Image (cartoon, helix red, strand yellow):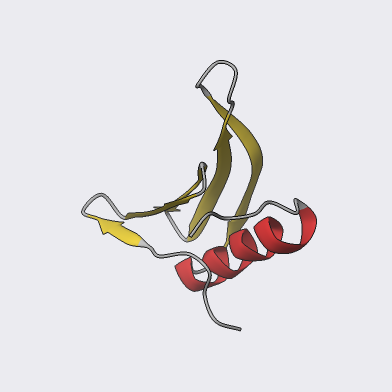
Length: 79
């Protein structure tokens, strides 16, 4: 499956991606990677956490986050 998000790497061992008001943050914490999926609330402009989870590797966390976005939440991206 082709990745749907474009990832940006940061020096503090985290990856971020944002598209269509949806933001994903992946942090390497010890031996695991934690991810947080959030989206912007149109009324207040604040971010609302949609899902969190963890994986053993960054690539697995990316796949889990993308799977949640596409299949479970039904969220759509603007291109």
